[in-house]
Amino acid sequence: MEDLYIRPEYRGKGYGTVLIQALANEVLKMGGSRLEWSCARGNARTLEFYKALGAREMDDWVGLRVEGKGLAELAGRGREMGV
Image 1 (cartoon, rainbow, N blue to C red):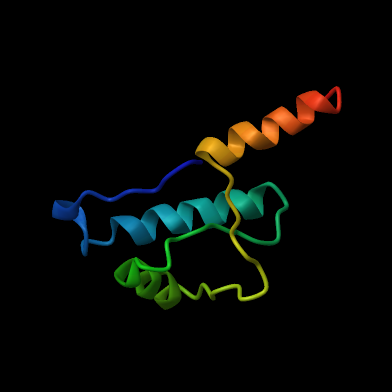
Image 2: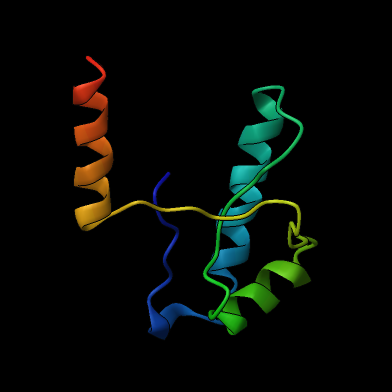
């Protein structure tokens, strides 16, 4: 799943909780043992919502990204190596 987004006019009505609970149920049905996702650090309200559901921040992982010119340069290095 790419995004879970609740329109502002529907926030605070329990829809987000119901959707996260449904995802948790699907994970258990599949035999999974964890539900993991990302949230922008600056999205304090949503982070608090997730924490209220029992989620915890993972301090042992660092988000990384290559984009734009850096992505093109990285891809070019792969071509140079025959990849």
